[in-house]
Length: 106
Image (cartoon, helix red, strand yellow):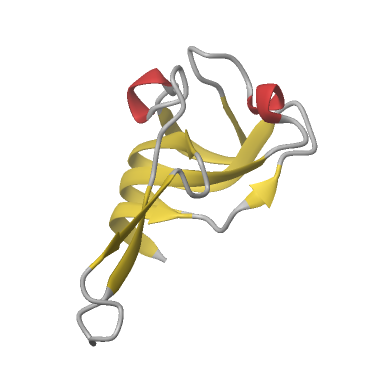
């Protein structure tokens, strides 16, 4: 798929110390690490169709898109790093990844 946007992966438990992805990036790609569900909001009358439960997403400090190295080029294993360190800091924890990209094939 070739897209100019963002996509969020399903939650997963971090098992390793490094994150690498196979991507052909003509533009640029950055990755954020976000809490799977950081806030739940519950609004509206629970007996009415307008009742809404939503979930907010919280990016971890040091692991936002601005903290991620810019990924460019075509590689089988782009190594993803952040100012906050590697994904290994979250080993054993559940996280989600948000991919922010322009002119990229993942």
